[in-house]
Image (cartoon, rainbow, N blue to C red; front, top):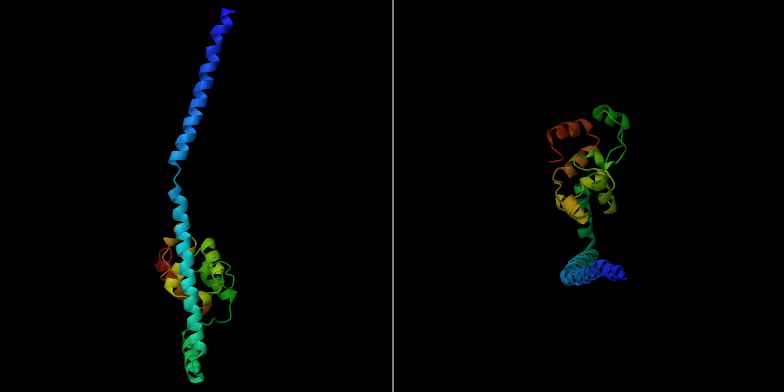
Length: 187
């Protein structure tokens, strides 16, 4: 009987230590859990929403201003817009293959050096799906598209992407290939 009484503290001590550690771990976790991260995330999203709402209001006001202009001004504005847009030529896959040495599909944005499948997907999400669309983008818009993908895409430098896309849209494959041979990751 004395043996049984002596063995009780052997299993009781680890049980009590375990319970005390669990309780202290729970309290420590509660104390260290930062409520600031959730409020920061909420603040970031609130700021994004307010910026988007401001941009939307600016777009709506500029659209209403354009609709109130006279017919002559609309004609001038549309002619200016038409001169700034890049229009593609008929795609010739054999010519592209001859220059690049691989099959090129029409309007594949990954032809532009520096754009991979994930960045291509980001541009498609922003309605930039053709070489002509990308050629008509500003570098700032390209940067905004990259920012929408998160931190890992912000490191890319899209400074040459619209010009590369212009070469592709116009079917100037030799000029594009020569220029890309001088670039390093699209820079």
